[in-house]
Image (cartoon, helix red, strand yellow):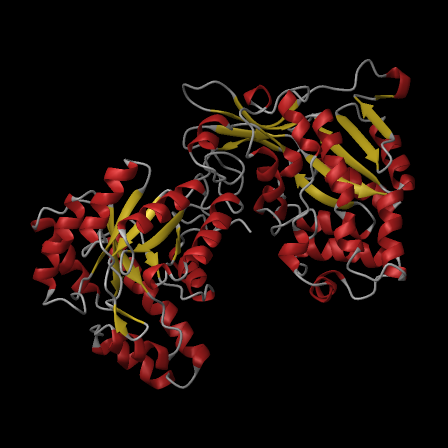
Length: 563
């Protein structure tokens, strides 16, 4: 998934003495390279030699991680005190200095802070000396241990500033999930809890749902006090892999979900390090919902076609003939896939309902769509669901946008002060009968352009009211999304290219096999999916009239679907 919350970063933890190194790197790589999230990977020095730490950091850099939380780690693991190998470090400040010396400015470095004092320390004042040493060694910001006494955090920040620590200090908030876990954690960390919080929790301590609700409200009040009074520049949530409370807190604060203008480009930023950030600013729309496949296709290229995905004749484009069907890995066994896509589909309507279910959120993913429906497509959700129930099986779509502010909550990207535009686009599988109906309509509407191909390579195109022999050419590259910003050239980051569409179609038809192979090859369900793959067309429909409103192109499809 991509994250609608758009966090500054997500944490990936690190086991004592590198015990979870392989798993931590794998999760970090997935978050960076497939979800487009910035990762703050924890790194504890305990039990590791200098060389082991260097290798771990290099591995993190290789997968695109650019942020490290440098920690000493617990003094005990496995029941014994850890002893660092020869050449290892004793203090987190040494680790921070080492990261700077070995990797320069590649990594942003965070360090831990303890508003109530470290469990192994001798008090807050003593801890401040160690914290100052970590910051002086090169730390960029501080993440604090969780706390429940807001005044304690404010006092801590004041003391840090008096000690000459000027970097951001981000408070740690841990939502209360249950009374037993809350009391256990505060006891273990020796955290002070105001009497007022206990007074609120005691009446509902045996009601887990009520505790969660109260815990959310307590966290909202703490966060508002810190944010509104300017005590911090962000919030760090300890989710403990329980996201619901954090989402509720963010909603209560009006943060994260629904806040626009934070996207640099219309798609989520992918990982891959400095090269992608600097060079890749235009992308074909076809792989929008299959980022893993897209990244695998391009990760070894020395340069992108024309540096801008602009010319399918580029030698690098030949790599696109390779397919990457990762869905088996993501969805496990056939039994698990049957739960998602149906135990025994036997007629076309069974398949249509699965596609409609994806649009409405009851089906988490499809072979062509690895993540939930994009927020901009949610604005046409009802129309999309009706279209899919009628056999127009959509795998990609965007509504038209005509000059919305670049900070718009749903469609905005690129920063403040701009206007963004996009042409309506839909990509779907449909039967030859439905294609013929669609062609008849598109021929009467010159602003619509239709590209289609079936599994055997047969093509049908209608461009500006012409088809077949009347076409002068096969159509060129079309900008689908563009933005106008102060003191900048027009930016057109999303395109449609007919030749790229044909390359993508090979993968798109191939992905039917992921669904097909969910069932026994002698079953009706297998034959049904196989027949759809072999008989349906993949269609891309582009509207040149971006001023017609977001329903325009989809209204036309609805009319056809109802006939």
